[in-house]
Amino acid sequence: MRYFAFRRTTNILATTLAVVGMFAIWQWLQRTLRDDGFVTGYLLFGAVLFLAGYSLRKKISVLPIGSASLWFQAHIYVGIGSIFAFLIHVGFRWPDGVFETTLALVFATVAGSGLFGLYLTRTIP
Image 1 (cartoon, helix red, strand yellow):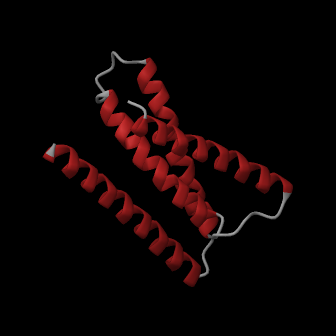
Image 2 (cartoon, helix red, strand yellow; image 1 turned 180 degrees about the horizontal axis):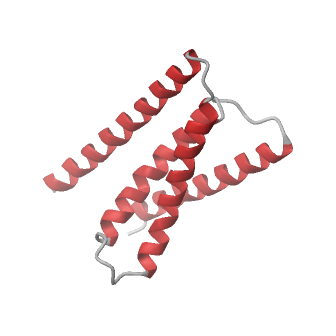
């Protein structure tokens, strides 16, 4: 049981540090008047590719690329981090245009379903 608590604490701490680091980099890019949309966009794109990789990992179980439980834990914490990356990417505001609003709604729906699925996996025995 100690290992579980240590692992969860470590993962939460690593996710928190990553989010704080993303925010600090975003603030630095804002202050130096650089285009922060590309940096946060590519970071978010990489996170989404990694999250989609979990599905691929489940389908190709013969490759020695880590256990499914390790991938699931990484999927959870990268998913939570990607929500914060998305908020940083849009500048903590709701998008204005039709295309941007549609993308934001799709991301919010997928992230919400992931959080709901996480809730279900933790509450239903």
